Length: 410
Image (tube, rainbow, N blue to C red; front, side, top):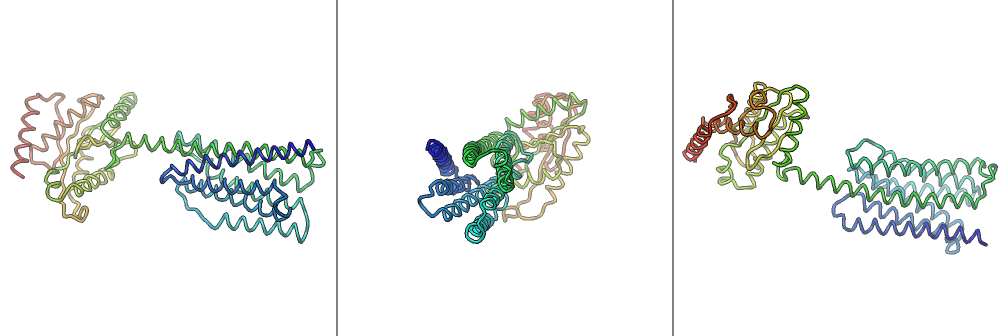
């Protein structure tokens, strides 16, 4: 009697733990907005809870019916959890897969209940199906990923892997009868299974919440570091990342160059076509610039229609050629932007570490002076800063000349 009570207590504790984890996932899914995966995990855990309730409450239904429905619900639950993992990763979700798997295991159990009664075969069929679904989820999670999401992936995937291996070993040992030979009774096996499932259930639910939490952190970090419109680095983030890259480039003994890019007559574009078209023009400009970037180059929005491009390992003369290619790519584009016949050109200023060192602020100041020279000399051109320090009055004269020519054009 005491053993029965212990078994029932463990089973009841497992149901309560599963139900609690399900409620936590439902609440998280309720407030997750568009986050994918949480709703699948909540529904999957709900199906698991219902299956466990049927499994331990044999008096509610006939024993065989209860076992068949319990196995079907648990397979369905793990299948939906697998769909949630794929949804979280942005992969396709074959909705019919878990339903077909649940129906198949119910048919197999029905056969081994009513046609050829075999407890070992039922145990093997259920364990293989549940273990296989756990391994499928583990396969989706035990993959390379960006930190810190990688830790949550591997934590959850490791639990799914251990759960799958344990279920498969339980099925194989039970089918071969080696458990009885080892002196392991059905009660001991049931206790061990209940405890293992309880620990796995807590770990899986915690892992899913960690995955969602880390993805939210990464999304917030992305928003804090990037310009919302163009997707480029914002001014503060560009400064920090560029200076770090310049320091690393200096330690490697390599040159670097910085290009300032400015859209010509951007105010006129906004006034003539509207600010929505102006936004589309900036996004188009960024797209054209990215076509001439390498994977380790940095692009940031300096302000308004000005962008900064840092090229590590490139000297000023080579950077001037890159800037010219970007200018021609933008200037030769004849298609409409946002369904408007916008004629876009850009002016560019280039500065290199050979004259201005590896200080980001100094490079920006030098490239900015070259940019204003390009503006003053007629726009739609590339100018390179050739002097280490331009007098302040020369910079002011260039700015006034550039503004004067702009007023004449307008």
